[in-house]
Amino acid sequence: MAARRMILAIDQGTTSSRAILFDENLQPVASAQQEFPQHYPASGWVEHEAEDLWESTLAVCRQALARAEARAGEVAAIGITNQRETTLVWDRSTGQAIHRAIVWQDRRTAERCAALEAQGNGRLVAERTGLRIDPYFSGTKIAWILDQVPGARERARRGELAFGTVDCFLLWRLTGGRVHATDATNASRTMLFDIHKGQWDEELLALLDIPAAMLPEVRDCAAHFGDSEPGLLGGAIAIRGIAGDQQAATVGQACFEPGMLKSTYGTGCFALLNTGTKAVVSQNRLLSTIAYQLKGVRHYALEGSIFIAGAAVQWLRDGLGIIEKASDSGPLAANADPGQQVYLVPAFTGLGAPHWDANARGAMFGLTRNTGPREFARAALDSVCFQTLDLLEAMRSDWPEADGAQTVLRVDGGMVASDWTMQRLADILAAPVDRPQVLETTALGAAYLAGLDAGLLPEPAQFADRWRLERRFSPSLAEETRRGHVAGWRDAVRRTLSAG
Image (tube, rainbow, N blue to C red; front, top):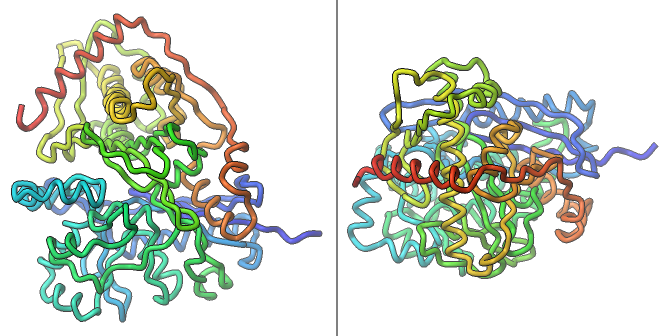
């Protein structure tokens, strides 16, 4: 009997850590998931304990292996995908973080970002990194930690401290501190990385007074990053793939051709449009980012980031208590009064693309005495659809090649299991929405990258042939009705913007 050849995908997310074992045909064999606490020390601040990230990741890896009755020797490679931009700084000698991880949603550096923008640095940042100056990205988070933790900047200059996004921190821990590296996709989200030259930018580091000595080495997404410590998982396993979660989902959705579009609906929503080997400069406040890097060749994408998607459903459940579980939101929304036009603008942590308003805060419009849980649920789910439309229209404007071509959106993430939400999305977009057979595309992408480097899996074109459609949702809403809904949404956003 032939020995099993499996791939272990680590999917370290904003609210939970997961591990999925895939076989060599990329079929799931076993999985495990563990939530961990969120910390909100001040308004607009979001933090994680570094040890929670590590311990939950290690626990789910061990659980997945145990459930599959798999030994380390049967695992050909580990692939890592992670919540992006979340920032950790740790002591190189002990591996201990010097401050809680500052999460991508955190807005504490909004004033610093506004000052940098006012000083005229926005163009430099956009030209080098493809990003906007915003608290979302890692750069100002690193600077904040170095400013606030006594002696940190001096220690960083002496090479005693290391910075990393979550993938980098997990890689450090998995390899027993032997490897300090990241991949090009995560590096491209720091606001410190020149996405055209493929290297850390000295001018941007100087702008934020961040010592280069604390930065990781940047590698391809599919590469041998190192081997895990034998005592962690029952034997040494090669770590061969890393990509930020949205880029990993782009790979998992097989969006390898220019013009292909995917949107992932998790805590936030992130839409990526493949623009090939040339970075597109957005005229509509979108981001240009590295979609993936293979064999030294960078492939780019236009990205629109929505901060609140599934988090709006969590708010219905945990904040308002009107649903018991997330899956209740679709059926509840389906029974909303069609005569009420209630809009939720979920700017709980500001608004992302294409508005980029860090100071906006959530608001609801159109409330009447008859508004109740059903209308709240519909408004929450509608907000995700409307925000996606805003991104799609901005992308169409930035990507002239899309003119006249029918847009088809490939979707993934927890929210896409709801048929009602996906039909509503197709109706609001006036475009088809394709849901794949494998919904765990983020973990799938990480597994593919690791399997590619391990020689288990084919090149991207052959991998793309394996993508399978589960269901297409086609638009059915009357155009006049759709336009009315969209006009109401645009008015609600206008009234929510901090400058409005």
